[in-house]
Amino acid sequence: MISRPKPPRLRWIGVDPASGKSHAVAWQRADGTWRWERPANTATALRDTLQRAIADGAGGVAVEDGYVGVNPRVSQALDQARGIVRSVAELLDQPCVSIQPAQWRASELAWCGWTPHTSGVECKALALRCVRLAHRVDTDDHDVAEAICIAAFVSQHSSYGESIGVTG
Image (cartoon, rainbow, N blue to C red):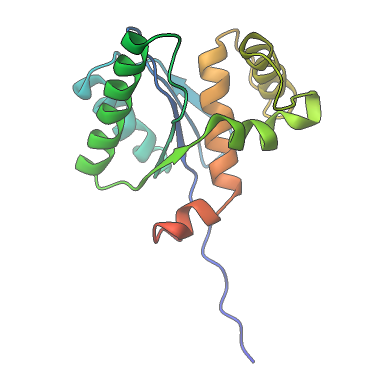
């Protein structure tokens, strides 16, 4: 029996949406280094950033979903921000998946102490620690750290792409 080689895994673009401030967008280049940007919360700025990521060989957009904010106003702003991300990904013909915070945190942060009961502030500190140690990225921006974790998580778990027909 001859087995077909697996296609290379897609290096996903991680997005931590923001309400009222810039998104955090991160992707891993072909050489293994990480790049990130903080585009404004507009379709044009996000499109330009995603196009740079695609030019670097990344593709597919993973956006954090599920966090609703501290009040209805923040929840509405986050929904709008996620909608911009999904719309721009569609316009660029890129698959887009939604990731619950607990999914990527359980995988990316558990080794450094995360549990489902870890507070939001502690999660941000753990994300910074994770990207410094596991991904060798020096940043003090917790939103960027979370975007890197999201991208790394989805890139390592091909089932997300396969579930929407993306194989590489």
